[in-house]
Image 1 (cartoon, rainbow, N blue to C red):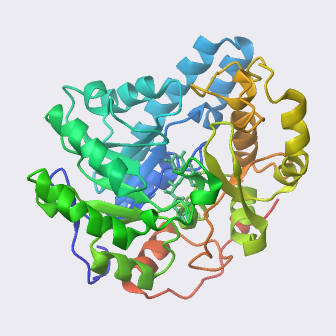
Image 2 (spheres, rainbow, N blue to C red):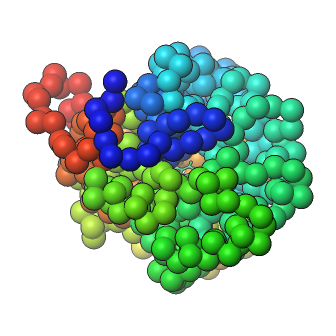
Length: 396
Ligand SMILES: Cc1cc2nc3c(=O)[nH]c(=O)nc-3n(C[C@H](O)[C@H](O)[C@H](O)COP(=O)(O)O)c2cc1C
């Protein structure tokens, strides 16, 4: 049993859950081990669907032997089904297993289908407007949770989905000034715009809900970005949120699915090491300025001027994005292979990887602790004393 805490449960599709959602983190950062461990505590654990083959040596061998796009895509769908199965097993039937799918990914419809067919409890979709999600999941009993960043986007999704006879089972509201990974703004200069403040979004949504004939409890709201303490959880749940989504603090837990070096890079990053830049998706993103990113940013203007508008063959053959700055020669987008860089980070390749991270400090400083300890700290404010562990998570 989870220790007692003062918060109301997060209710999603009839289930009463701890009001904490572990955010989906690709490539491979939140796979079955993290998502299953979070769900086992009674909360929402999220598998990031993108390119999960990197966790399966046999699938990587299959891709090496036959490096065509169809094979890579098939490997990823097999990997997703294995990860869902593994997470469900680990969860022992508690909490909820969600699958995060990014709309900007070319195979998003396949990932959604695979999530439905393999028994995921929810689909969480961001990085683009998820207007087609109700159609893609027709006939499946699965919670649908869009990720948006302002009241206008939420109102639009509510209206369009209601025309299809569907309501979101919850909405994640992600603040671009704090979150890790891709950010829900078109322009870096907008990041601190008042329209992203959670208080303002709650206030703006009241008349939207009324005009649509909805009660506030019909669509639970989950805030995300920089929630790193019990005080922050308490503040946002008191202000009107029904749950909080947490990313970076879960990425660095013992159960996080990435290499220990990945966790070290995130946990040891100082505020001045965390930067925003334009990704190959065209969206701004936030990451740690590790050697590769520092080099890329130093040369970004030169790279853009030289090859910005030239089309390139996809370096991995996966063609992971619907629109890619590198492949499609979109000058104002980023110009690197995001799949290669994120996969390197997952493997712990500090020199070559791209390490997404949120902006704020971490609940346990630079210590690596368990999912259970993190959730207890966030929900009760009590940190268990650190115990000496075997060196399984030391840098190798
Ligand atoms: C390493 C990393 C990878 C991420 N990848 C994804 C992703 O694949 N899809 C997504 O919707 N959000 C992604 N996010 C965002 C998280 O799910 C979460 O909403 C966000 O990081 C919350 O902010 P926090 O890190 O300050 O808690 C990622 C974040 C991190 C740190």
